[in-house]
Length: 291
Image (cartoon, rainbow, N blue to C red; front, side, top):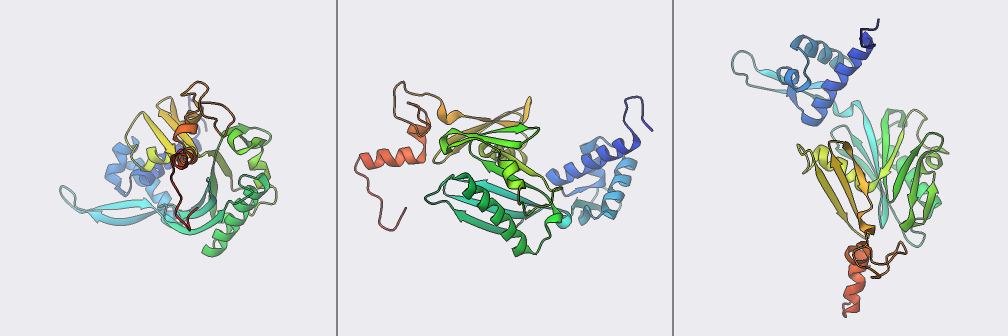
């Protein structure tokens, strides 16, 4: 039955479960008493939702704390093994694949170095597929238990209806690469497990806002320095962050040539490879045995 606003009882139940799970995930462990003001739900609704989540194996007890009077309050948390997720970082020197439980405890890791081929599309896709299969095998986890695989990549990510996530990466030689579709073809994951592809700086910004130095902030700029230079801008209007091609802003007219082909980009002065090149120009020498 739908209410005046068109929401059904099922919609309301799902929204209440989501509210409780989100607060326990980001702020837990919490008591039932604390979940009320944190979610805006009544004490009766909190008790009913928590009972359902415990019965479903999604929430578990995690000790207790003293109350102002009466019995101690039982703490609740998201059950760590009630779901698993994979994170993939397509970095500058390697592709890293990691398997986590819901507390972000690392369960397995696979690294694939990038050598001569660097960002060859087939190589990257193969590294991601093989890495996913390896971490699942190491942990002995069936792929059906995964909630999803998040993948951070260089470049601009366009989310399309027909081809999924498409990557435009001028500096890595990717021109409208349908990465999500390529991964899905011959994927070690079932169709029900999503690939979530986004810009690496944007995913870093999201992580900092959720779990790191940005917690509680309304506005933030998260800057990434490496071989490239990136940034993620987070505002109330752009809650999940927006990747900013900050490294390719012109800071000097007709300046040094950037790897993107333009002249005077910030990355041509502040990127790691550019700094090393200038150091060598000044007579610096790389110690033997290092890359």
